[in-house]
Image (cartoon, rainbow, N blue to C red):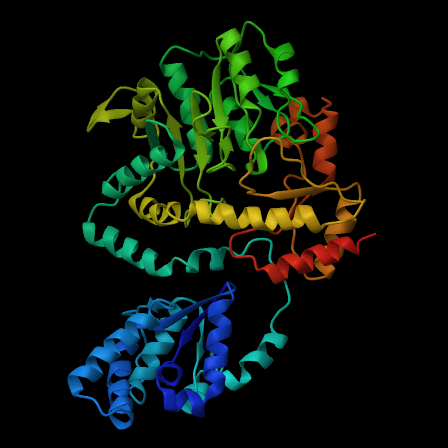
Length: 511
């Protein structure tokens, strides 16, 4: 998504009938950028007074009405404009150009949100040629733009919320409370409600979320050193690290080759007298087959700990990820569907004792200031990340909806027998769109040569990592095949239909 700020000259062109006839390209560009979801359009907050002043002069010349009626008309006109554009505030750290104070304010607003400035102001066009563009040149410039399609445009994902981020930032800074304050409490409450659980506990990251769940079960006497936790062999290594760091034993289970998720039919054969939990990982955004997994857990009196790091908002039947087992660990790493501006994580559960134990463990083992029940750690979601996550949580379902649109377009339009497309048997929020081919490396290079960035999730399975050298001679053939063949295509809420179509066209030409 590209940000564009309208200079005062353009705004008056739009609002003045006389000027709109004199400068039609201003209206042409405005209509284009406000109708295409590739653009977010702003005006600088510093422009409002000047717009009001210039509009009054324009309307006074062209209309035979009273000043009061003109002021009422101006008010309604600006209100209507703000339905289509957002306000970008003028930052206090701006460099003032005393030869053009008004222009420097607009430029400062643009730089703060990484925006281009659409303007007819010749001085601004000359002085700030790197970010200022004339409407007569706009459509020509589109053809010159970089044609690279990023795997994930994190900047655009976040700048679309910049106005709300500013408010959240100001709220936190002005509160004077930066750890375990009102923003974190509010986010925990809202995230628990979103997931459908009684409790959510903010922690420092997704790995800590899983570590703390297992640690809490040990403190509660449910698990002990040397106990076993069943976990998929096809997962990001963090799932397994959480088990190892608690002096528990990871027991790897192969995935279903259709879904790439843990195969419930292979779990029971791995259960021993030492087994205490199953950790299903909702990989790529798709929920595991939880009915079967929960039935096995119930039969053998096992805990079910979801790794929901990639499945924020995903449903299994009528429940969301995070509310499908005894507890769940979430990551808010920036690239997630619900991503922070840094690290963050959370645990969700309906178990009050578990929630209280995790909350204490994550705060130096303290349930009360300067009193420590456990030898805990420092793993807390800070106020700033919580405040920013509250903003993004409000739009998470929209993000998921847009991802589903892109995924459906891929599924319906990629027509290449050399590529294996994902099969969804439960529900997916499409954190990743993962295809497979034996020619994975060749395909990745081909796409890159055509300006399309892709990633591999993941190139080396956990049992082949140096960190687990004791497993390096073990064979998990399904997992190994997946790791040798998978490739993740670009997908996000800010990816344009044009880019999606181009990706499909390039894929269909691959041979």
